[in-house]
Length: 486
Ligand code: AMP
Ligand code: ZN
Image (cartoon, rainbow, N blue to C red):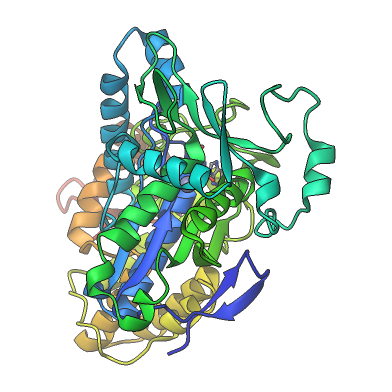
């Protein structure tokens, strides 16, 4: 069993050695809840869900702590709530609920802890105090700012030098900043903005900057709350954990600043040992994002016909996403979804209502591929090989092994009956459309155009629709009925 992961911090693939194998600890930056999540946002959720499943499989389900936060204090949230004329709380609650519904449909396991920023304000203030006390932060005009010059290796994660960054900084730098790259840990709140009593002797209400939120939440849940049960070796490395993840755009400044805050506040050499970043999901070569307006939400994909003219089951999106390695960009297309759906239909037909086997059945090729820096495309190839072998005949235990291997990627977690029921509901099987194709096929048969007749039959079979032909023995009339394939 050897697991290797690509580490952004060292820019190479490395063997993964947890600080405490009985308590593997991972933090992933979660959504800022002001609007529906788009399918680009779904990528880190899916990718790190696969890693969570793999870690649980390798180290034991009770030996992995996965923290994925909810950012519920942010200026984008304030602006949106004002726009809609609703309270911030109403907006964040509604959006968080929607996020949970969406990702449940993608087969995402709940993380061990899902902390909300607004419930960790005291921890953020304590970090501000510690950073000021240690000379890594200062107070200016009601703000607490991180003094970037106080940290010699600032820029190591994103591999930039301070000189480079300063040269690239915008000309307009707030006059109260000592250095152009200094960033906000705490800022004053005006009337009507969310605010809490400020730290560091600042008068009046204020609110945290975005980066300090993750430093506070990760330390609370991956160190403070678990430290008593850690191994002695892990206790000797306080305030450090194993894996930190998110999308590649978060590397700078968000993660660089998290590292700066956490390391300087706690005086540690690292915040997390391994930093993992997923590539972008793109549309026609551009990052899918809200600001570019080229996005489609998970909700729209699952529940409306906005993409490709139909609804798509969540598992199809999941498989389509995993067909590309997590560090590569994905160009998102309906063709990829169609291909993924076809694969799932075949696999479900193969497993029927088989149940997965318990772990401990030896390591599958699928697991071996996943252990190589989450090589999901090769893991899927290994699944195809298992499926091919099974289609030539396989016993119940071979089916169970196939299903368990797929479960590692969060695939085939249903039975075939459940899949078909969900597929019928999701894929918007239009009965009128099916009847129209059957009529076209009967026309083709009458014209003795057997090729066209077969083409239509095969096309419907692709969609999971099986045709049954019958001839009335007395009238000789030829009729066709259909059913969803089992
Ligand atoms: P945000 O709500 O913008 O902070 O994003 C939440 C997560 O989604 C972060 O980990 C981002 O890096 C990630 N993300 C945002 N857009 C994309 C995209 N187009 N492709 C992949 N990941 C993305
Ligand atoms: Zn974060």
